[in-house]
Length: 170
Image (cartoon, rainbow, N blue to C red):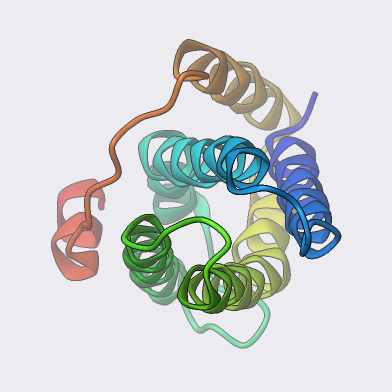
């Protein structure tokens, strides 16, 4: 296992869940809520696992990639994106499932999450593949999967100040 592959697989699962929602335009609110709950859990647990396990290692080893000059830039941007995703999730949760406002908010989560995944795949994951040993990538993959399994029922996401995060993990 490789942490970069685990993260990419999670990204695929997130894209698949958004595609599923796209197919559910005429579904009852209870079905939408069930799918949304699963997707919200995937997004929140994934972001937290990255913050606990992946980004501290990227800060220690990275050199910058995909247009970013440093791992600090990659990480600051990623933590900022996680906050945007959390805020967008909260907006979805403030509306009745299936209402026009709910669909609009869900589409916004898809957008901000999609933008984040594209940047992360181009920047942080590329940088990590270039810099980290296979042994570290394997160990982080196991820890990441364990973290996600331990939090499969979900977590409450909280915004994190990107600058403070980088300062505390550097």
